[in-house]
Amino acid sequence: MNTQETLLWINEQFSHTNELVQKTLEYEQKNIAYMYIKSLIDNEMLQKTIIKPFFEMANMEQFKLYVQALPQFEEVPAKEQVLLEIMNGSILLEIGNELCLIDLKLSKNDEVSSASVEMTIHGSQIALSDNLLTNLNLIRSYYRQPTLNIEYMSLGEVNQQKVAIVYDTEKVNTQALKLIKEKLQRVDKQVISAANQFNNYLNDKRFSLFPQMIMTERPDRIIYNIAGGKVVILQDGSPQCLAAPVVFFDFMNTMEDDYHTVIISTFLRLLRYLGFFISLLLPSIYVGVTSYAPEVFRTELALTVAGSRMGVPFSSFVEVLFMLFFMELLLEASIRLPKAVSATATTVGGLILGTAVTEASLASNIMVIIVSAVAISTFVIPVNEMAFAIRIVRLLLIVITSIFGLAGLTLGFLVFILYLTSLDSYGEPYLRVYNYKKNKERSEGHL
Image (cartoon, rainbow, N blue to C red; front, side, top):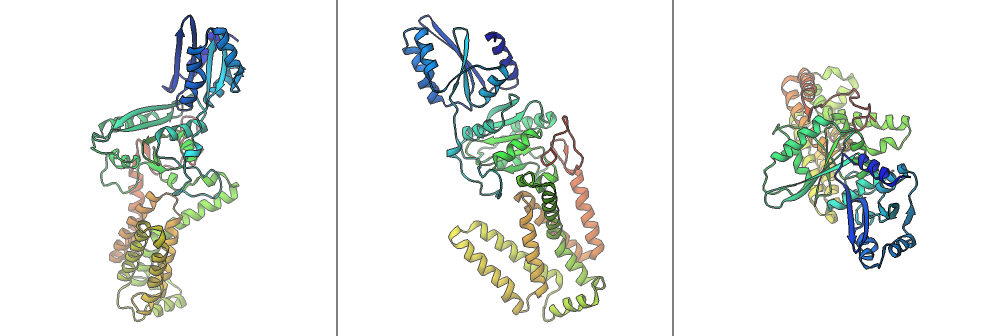
């Protein structure tokens, strides 16, 4: 194998990234050259294993024998295998026109925590950490492609936080990448404490209800996004990152969808979308039917609903708002309270809403069932940002339905669909369902 040809070929493979480090050491008629990917290498081991012995050895022959005696030493196989070993955390070392590999991989798995926001039963439980180098090491370890590129910039006038833009140069949506870079350069905030803030800073529509970027803490989801052509933004000090562009359906997918058989995955997706529609429409349907069109129910059901509302002094509209308001307070309290008391507080709140309210005739039994179904259905939505947006839309639909009845609900739902179709995420249609792409593998959930 020709040494120079191999080195030139490897340089060509990494021509799209600035992560490849190449250095030459010369001292007292001794010289070596080496190359590696900086986010994968343990710098301390590199110093102790290669650099320090090079300056201490008397001659090149002695250094060569020393390198060959290292337990991490590996002879160079085919150049394709050399490329893979470099992406696995090895250093390619040139000594006297001969190549060898030294494994100095930096392992950061012991410095990461378990996923606490995006929980799954199957698959990896590793989450991002607060350290940017650790996160990039995880991504590099799982995405072994020379086309993976990482660009750095510092943002925040006061804290000057380091931000990394990660993408695959061959698969990335170039239009989205250009827009994201331009908007990042225009960010002029004093303090940026977390990557999540970019969801607002990069969004030109200040009052947009739906998120234009998807937030995640899972390295496996990041890899899936990069492979799908998305741009990932990480920040030092932030255990979560953002990926864009996104479509609406990205927020309804989980990593577990790929771990099950097709039938089970399809069933879970359908269950998720059913929960989405229940959470969005059920309270409005209750208000519209009880207030404007009770004939929609069968006679027995209509009598049951009417009987359960006997003694309730409020209209169905006020009843729904009353129950949903306290449900929202309960959800917010469960998030903000310390873990030691949150379970007790939510249990007490549930008993008050479920038992005391009905016994005091402030709400009907059926209303309690509806609110419980809505709360459970809201939790089915995998990404919190989308769940928050749906909670706002739900309240708007209730108000419209209370004024215009079921016709208003139908019109309001159509306006909601039209609003989604008018949105875009960095040039990507927000509600697209077809499989856009350069290589027919573009968006997460449609690979």
